[in-house]
Amino acid sequence: MTIAEVSKKYNLTPDTIRYYEKIGLLPAVPRKENGIRDFNEEIL
Image (cartoon, rainbow, N blue to C red; front, side, top):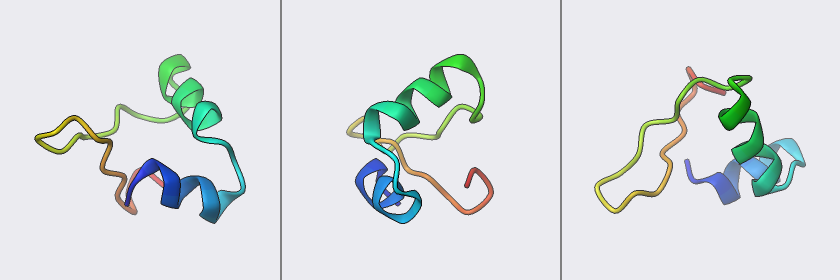
């Protein structure tokens, strides 16, 4: 799931999700080969 899909699902901006990851509220999100975050159900 991309950050755009997560932001729509939880009604948060992508910047907010990135911030939560940065401060450790979310665990480090695995990334695809091209660098795009790849959220899974365990992280959500």
